[in-house]
Length: 353
Image (cartoon, rainbow, N blue to C red):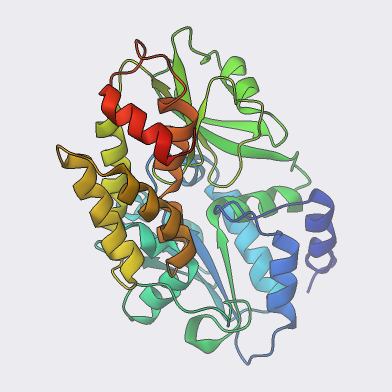
């Protein structure tokens, strides 16, 4: 093991690098957990599932900085003395970058595994990814045990997002400057993937990219499905988790249709393992399309999903809708947003505003 590899943990700690897959778990701590875990073989998984709408950072890395991400993976393999690394990638990305990927991994202890086409968003959850690679049903595992001690083939396994490995590669090159990739989407001119200092606020990002709207708007940060919704007075916060900012014009998006789009995503992508997520999201969908909407039951389901769901998908299913109702829908004047007054009155009562 080279001196550079032995010293990599100290450099990752100094950089305060956290995982880029959404959970923001300290990267050095996860690597050390796998290093200390007992097991004949150890494995590295690079998660390139990127299944949430509105996030394209992994695509951007595959297109522009794959060599640096591979350097990060090889550093992990050497540090952990891993048997091999597996790139777990969604089918669309593999089809686009197959030739490039095969060229760059040639002669290395790295393999490619295509994410199952019908595994959906949940297929990107780390234990679901492990199940997929093992040929098991694609659904989350009960934890503990956690992958660093018992992952693929019951062996210690490091699972990191592609951007995390890209950042490790930058650290190895002494080119890491505490930046993270942010995807900007929606009702704005300059969409795309940008690199920003981690301390920049949402407002700073929109102004720096000349995407701060002149019209009445709100944003969704952290993905177009599970991201939190904020009004234009709440932008003094950092982008965290899955880094994206999507701008919405208030007048352009019909409220109930927008909420249904968020709920539809979770109905479609539920693995069906647990009742709260499988049935709860379906009930939300039914309420949104019904003529007489029962907002009390709607609120009860939103409250219970995070507390009773088996995994993060069910927990995240309520974030966008709840934050949209509280931060946008009920705070705007009636002339700015079109919903029946009876519904607005009931929503205010149910959501205690």
